Length: 269
Image (cartoon, rainbow, N blue to C red):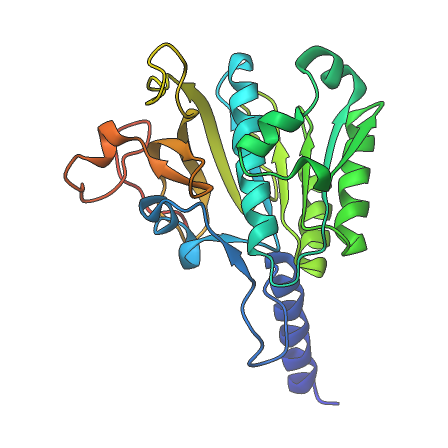
């Protein structure tokens, strides 16, 4: 084989490895990675290809420690929607956390999950002794190809660990939702990174003394090929989707979604 042929083969192999790491590997003409959507068109349009790719890791970062329940709620909504969007549902969602986190922050609550569109009967809960064990459980669940989504809470996931999760998610075309520690900005292999904060809800339409639908402030702070932005959303239990909160949904559409510094930025491609 000539040197030129060797170089061409090396370039082809490098391209295949890069495609595997991006989760887009496949034979020529194969279908692109599957998607699932949040349900709010303004947010879905900001995402690459109009939705979240189901063969990748998506990182959810609470703004503060007090916003961790909001991140859990957002994860429940995304996991429930991922399961319903799966072309061939497998019937299970793994939710992993350490025993210490479960003791301090609580465990997933069936009635609350059901209200957010996640079937509690589909949940497979894992409690581990350390964050490394949570990451191992997530990777094994993804590689099994037997679940619709894997959700885990690890305060400080490293780049190497999230890269392993990304490769496992790509191989099985199964999404992984990774809830990390408050305010984290360290590099990970996640396809998208979201910052989540709780927002005051409106009063319930049937009982003014009761709280209304859950509301969150979402900021898309990393999305290769997408448009970064910030939105206030609420969960619509009638449709099982997110929607822009009415006090912002009724405003005229802006030229783009502002980030926390008030500028519209295009994600690096």
